[in-house]
Length: 78
Image: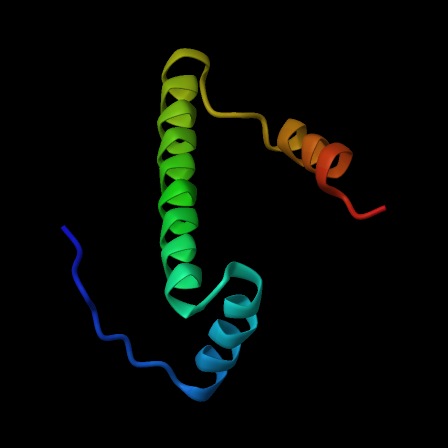
């Protein structure tokens, strides 16, 4: 089953959509891909939240200094 939705864009959003449309083969495809990516990100966030809650339940909250060290080691700009 296929449905149609109306989405209102402001000028900046429309410019972004047009930019993505060129890469993804059209506006509709770009919007669909954006929804898929948003859903994937949301699932990752929920999984991480669940993992962290389980971690805290079994091992206590993460050590802030350890988290800062990992952030620096793995995510700092080179």
